[in-house]
Length: 175
Ligand code: SF4
Image: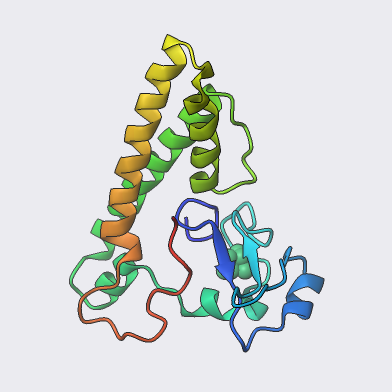
């Protein structure tokens, strides 16, 4: 979920990252502008079907630094790894429900992050062209996205209170 567009819309490069090499390795790097860092979108082009990272040895700094809250809690012994796995399964089910509803509402753009897909679908439906059935589905979608965001905020994005401050958040949060 850290790399497939569920939790994040993009990854920002850090000063130590070699943007040219990462681009050569297949990441679609968008150059930085002004104070904006260079970045690449999620779902990640380096994510393999088995969930592994094709660029693991060369992955960017944010990818190296990021540990979700749940992993930090499990490593600290405050959550069992079995309980953490159940929590991940719950979040994946919520994300899949969001994907199902997006498809039902006509968005099949699986190569974009869930947050971006939801925003685009919202704009389209809120422009006033939705019939009653689509409006009902959109209500379900909004609720499903809200639940997923709560789950992500509580268990994946927010660092534990005792986490070290530097780079604990790793990848940028979804908007
Ligand atoms: S480079 Fe690898 S670790 Fe980083 S987002 Fe892509 S798949 Fe994930």
